[in-house]
Image (cartoon, rainbow, N blue to C red):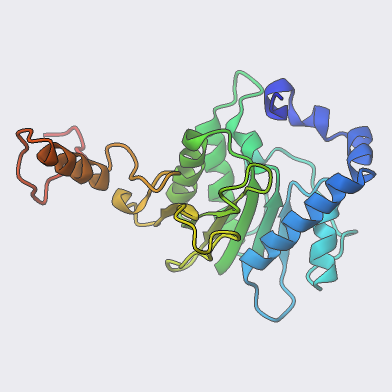
Length: 261
């Protein structure tokens, strides 16, 4: 089955009539509520009322979960806009942000003027500015492939976030879910994905630091990103085991070159 973002722009799938169909489908509602509850759990909010931004809120199903937990009212103010153009809020106004099934749309170009890299960075940088310095943001999303996960996490890191991707039920075809967990403050320890206890699968698909150390950013199979320092060192070790001539490791191994002399 083709992915929705490959078929048409989001307004085709999220107009008033389609939203009504979605909200009347008991199976879809149940899935949406479950993902919203899991996203709220990953936010790890304090035992107090928080000001939460619901991104891609749609017909308000995820907002209902926030409301029942005492964080906001579904009938609050709404904004219709393009996340790729950034979020128009004052600096530091939100305690947290949550999003269900919306982030992957920014990886698709619906117009000739759309550049996914620029749109993701614009979104993450404006979101980072609108959050407090101790805030978290959790995005449930459906990545198309490993490269898309790396694209998303690299732009979040560039915008200033710490964090990574938590994967629930990684060995299940239907139950597997991806959650991008971001934090604005100091480095964090990501929670363990559901259904990963005792499994050899890398539950945190990508972990990254705002400091930009590429050797801490690992790909979706637990492998270092291509051309990162860790990737270079692992490749050299593999060559050594194969008996190939390999230069000795040094502080310059895998260092990014600026191109200047």
